[in-house]
Image (tube, rainbow, N blue to C red; front, side, top):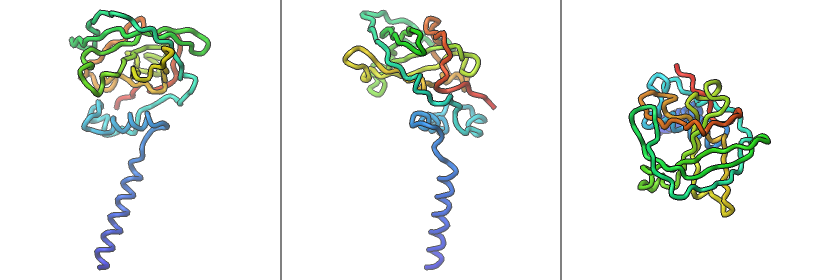
Amino acid sequence: MKKIMLLFCLLLIASCNSQDKRPLMGDTEYQQELNASYKDASKSPLKTKDLKNFKGLDFYKVDSTFIVTAKLTKIANAPTFEMATTTDRKPLYKEYGILNFTLKNKDFELTIYQSQDDLSDAKYKDYLFLPFTDDTSGEDSYGGGRYMDVMITDENPDGTIKLNFNNTYNPYCAYNEKYSCPLTPRKNHLDIEIKAGVKVFKKH
């Protein structure tokens, strides 16, 4: 009986120590979920050597200044086009709408896109794709730009939608060149430093 109790205690201690060594990394739920997915070898875009040393993505400090309300002007009858990527792959997209918003007392405009390949997928059919570059691109953030997922279901009755630049992510190409990633259209450059969201990844 004593041996069984001792074994139980040892297992309990080992379990607690294991949990202590693997805390959720990140200051927000979004950061924690993103880090958890990158730490998971079954779905991580990281190369083996980078995954081995992975301790969490590098983020700018969360800043509420970079949460803005944008006016969404939908584009009627937009043509389907082939989005340029880092490879020969040409996924089908449509321009869904134009986003106008004010950030740090400056007015900006971005085009938001809808993947035509995802429309038949119940999991992703409500997702809109917002790629952008800014004045940190190629310096503190990835040179190819960053992405933001926006949900159609988050659109308000007054035609506005919230953009949270703290919840941005890098294309998988930023971590591993084997992936094919949409290139950010030139017109989606923001002439401002977006010091929010994920930073450039430093490979090992």
